Image (tube, rainbow, N blue to C red):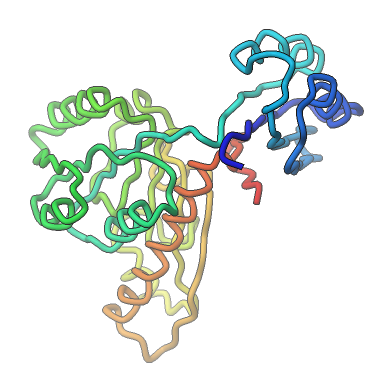
Length: 285
């Protein structure tokens, strides 16, 4: 359903929320296509994703905010309405490693990621050829300890110039400043970390895992906050390793995980399947 509407809601958990939402859509001649929900007992929070066909709605969807406002007020909802036809504008940040970049660009080219990629930003020129192959503009913004503030200001200016509303860090090997994170917004900033968080945060996690002698390594896609590698987790996966694996073999196995985990997270975000609450996420399938 290419023209469906998606209602995402979080509110205090109480009787009648689901029935009231369904009744509102029914009374205005909409048709619910998919509905999923989650109740968090600890926080008494209810979260739901309702996708519906508005083709025969008795009012224009531009009026939805006004029409739905009384329901939202009654149930103290935080909510937003999205459209399946919307295409977020995503900028990819990358350093030298190209596997996550290549995977994202391929999936976008094949139509799996329904978004626009107007720009790639890097602190190295190494991946220019890949950007050229997919015909995506590639801008190099060198970063050193002496020009970090200036470099980030240039990056933010590029994000605004290209009207991007999603930033994906595809193995971008720089720690973002709190100012950058606050400007872009954590819920619009996705990172892939090459570890099964919360284990082995920071740099060289595969080396840390090797020294610890673990039997599983993983990758984690998460929203970025001002605390390093501590943002709400969207997706994770693991692969088994053994005592025979070298650090280099851990890195090789990990790269396969990284690109798949990141692409899943980006896809779910683009499809409006992720709801944040506290430092957690609910991912509706």
